[in-house]
Image (cartoon, rainbow, N blue to C red; front, side):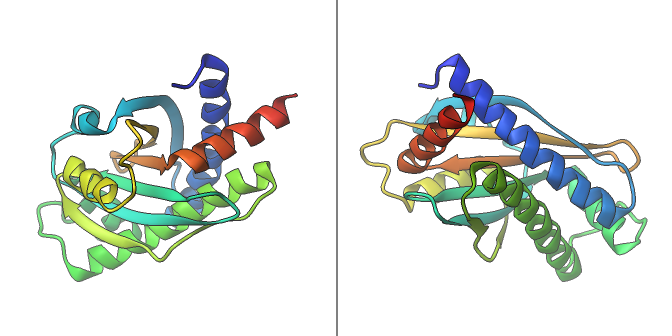
Length: 201
């Protein structure tokens, strides 16, 4: 479990990364975008479904590479009712009642790549390390199912808990909501916490 000081340090790290991601997205969409980090949860792996809505959503998934032990994942989570609004904003379209197309999927991958790259770049700069996202993959499904698939593919046999590092994106103009989830494995999380504690000394 994280203590309060560790949670505060991680939240501050997230605020810096979120601010950079929001600025990058604001520039791309030419509208005001705000992001905040309301919570960091340490949850049992088997209870992830209690922390993520069952609503169908688009998830853009990245593996984290670079100067960190073990690695982890970053997920951009966009609820279904926000997907079309977000891609409309990027593509200059207005129709809301429509099915997702290949163009929407390409736009989501690009938006995710821009936001996550900015998020990781800002956090890595603070920690004086290199953190890079893998090429993204897109899943349109129930979010908890995507989380469980990711965790099942990793060696979590000896780990009972995972940290869900959650940010929220807001745009009043387009009524978009979204989340970024950071899923570090235990070696990566321990390393990041150690770096943050050194920075605070």
